[in-house]
Image (cartoon, rainbow, N blue to C red; front, side, top):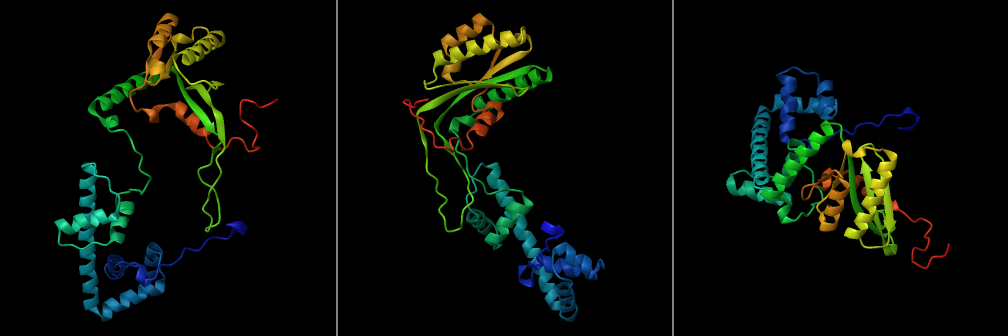
Length: 314
């Protein structure tokens, strides 16, 4: 905070305390003889509220018994929620809403659970988060793809342990200049932004190595084997001039796209003795080049709104 001020933690009220917490507060004071101030700090409540709960438990023992019973019920409910969630996760059942857990627990037990309890268990007990679901092709987690990714990972780890340089090559494109994803705006604003198309789109082929060096080319041609061959030729010539003998300690990493694995490309790779390793299917998360493209496609690339068509004069 400015001026050295510290933010005060908001104290929880009695209504915000579950029965289990109330029973635990009384137990800590009466059984473990913890000071009211320490209990208040632990549960983010006032010392006055702690004293009130302790006083009620002494004057109304039946109320304390009710709290203990309710605490036990809440514990059973949390265990039932955990079991239901773990069963769904093991069965690869997407958990869309808390309703799904509530219904499952109600169907298999005599317990009644609330949505708030389910969300609390998901976040606090199991460490789950409610995130945007990413759609992947059904074959991406097939047995074949899983085995190929495992073998690819072992091969890459072996090369990196040997100190080999990996040069990751891939392509992308820019068909717009605005890559705004989030903006600050008033609560009543729809947070809309205008799109700015780049026509014809810019094709980008880039390479990044494990030392952070980058090579790239831009064109307005669709990427095919001939375009990829042109980039690989220029890259190989540049590396030959920059680091003669680079083939002995470097590997070119590419994915399985047709313009990476086509006959013309393979013939050139064999002819030029390029050390190449192809990644396994759906291994985007292991491609460093994706971080480069992600860093490029961020924010507004053309803030001055300069023309982007073919007929742009100098």
